[in-house]
Amino acid sequence: MSAQLHASFVKRFAGGTSIQVENLQTPADPRITVLFGASGCGKTTVLRCLAGLERPDAGRIAFDGQIWSDAEKHVFLPARARDIGFVPQDYGLFPHLTAERNVAYGLCQMAPRQRHLRVAETLEWIGLHGLAKRLPRELSGGQQQRVALARAMARRPRLLLLDEPLSALDAPTRQGLRRELRGWLRHFAIPTLLVTHDRQEAVALGDHLVVMHDGRVIQQGLLHEVFSRPGNLEVAGILAVETIQPGQLVDCADGLATIAVNGMRLIAMAEDLPVGTRDVFVCIRAEDVMLSIGEDAHASARNRLPGIVRDLTRDGALVRVELDCKFPLLALLTRQACQELSLAPGVAVHAVVKAQKIHLIAQA
Image (cartoon, rainbow, N blue to C red; front, side):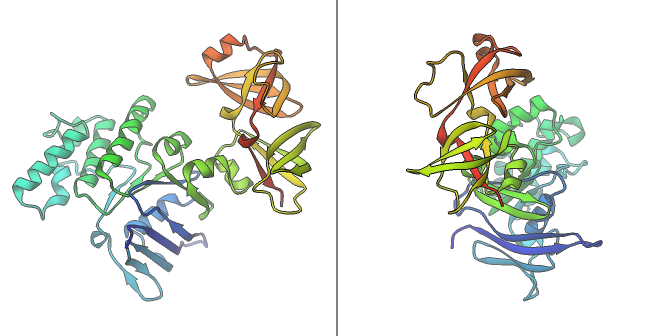
């Protein structure tokens, strides 16, 4: 059997709300699956049901051929029988135990020498060398997070579940730990399901993406495919596609669609459009928009839209450039690129977008 998670279940709450998961699946190899959606959409409840901390009211959960929960057959394995690693949002460290004793807590069945070596190895790998004897209150937030991750991974569980693992950290610590976390998960080769509402975190950590909204899974697949080709307007909004504009299909030939958007013509790939589509939503990510001054730059591109810069806003190391191309269009550039182009409100530019970077969603 492949180490794959299959889950279709319902969890109901007092007051009538419910979480309804249909055909949630993770890859068979040890990849990182990101459960993504806005706060309150049900991600943590799904994770707790998978961990055995909540009991679904209907449906079935199975991993690696083992039934974890089957409401119809009255089967429910508790968390301790699922061989998982679980890291909650608040880390869940024992305040009276040192870092090394927290990590060793789940290794009680190992021989003392083997347990000591495993703890030391894990603490060393995760960057906690020299901090083994400290209590949680003597550690920074980032160090406490490392201890929580080390404790979950030291057991080499069959599945690792992480609930917003970096959300409690300040931005610089979160950014640094994000880079390291993917390396650790790759090193330990443990299939991982990670909950986050942070798009940057999802992109930096994930291989597979599951999008949730209002208690339901609404799209899943390889991360880059879901981000570049959202299945509907709801998913596009959740994934924060910067430009979403209504348009009309003018022509479709040789796999290319010509779309009219407020008087402008755009060329896009037509492969995802149902037969008979006339009205569409045009989705363009800001990072896929290039800007140029003059007529000759990017001459081979199919979409070269004349526009006017309306505003520039700093976004960390990048700059968000608001354009008027007869419809609002957002570009994301480096500060250096903005300086080289001498961008400022009122400057005339050409926005260049490749046809394969424009995603079309048929209007219902």
